[in-house]
Image (cartoon, rainbow, N blue to C red):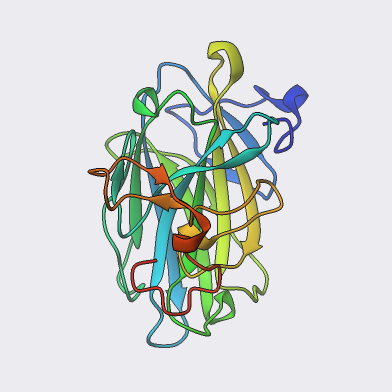
Length: 233
């Protein structure tokens, strides 16, 4: 976790029921311990037709070397994981309001999960976020009636993935913290996303033979990072 944020900066600002924070890249907000459920809304406008964008949540844990790595993922194939649920896939970006929504119940997230990373990827081949504008992520209360914080991305983006933000679990029972990232990445789905902030991707996770419980598999069945020929990811 120390690789992701400056621990000394935690707790400087706290979400509240009577204020909406307009956040910039790298900003941080503490989530009070009494806030158990959050609604994450993501929106965008596509400049061209045929773009299939997907919002996902990558769950990170730490290995024996204290390196962060994906341990689970909630995305369009596995829409419900412990404490995290995706409400669906908007394939056009059309219409008013949020294009996709992710529900997070912090007290139900598994204990070995260190951070929740919110990412949007373009599943359509050979397309990039250069064809997308007005991208944002906002954090709301459990009913969606109040917006705690909103982060709007600016500038030209050239890759097919975008890491919007992450929620980091506090150590020793300390509150979770929201950190805005705005980091470009590559991958047609969350399982293929790689970042300098963690080791590897989630393509090693196999749900097929375990009734929905993720299990690592060997290299021979690992999905490729390019996404070519991958029908589900």
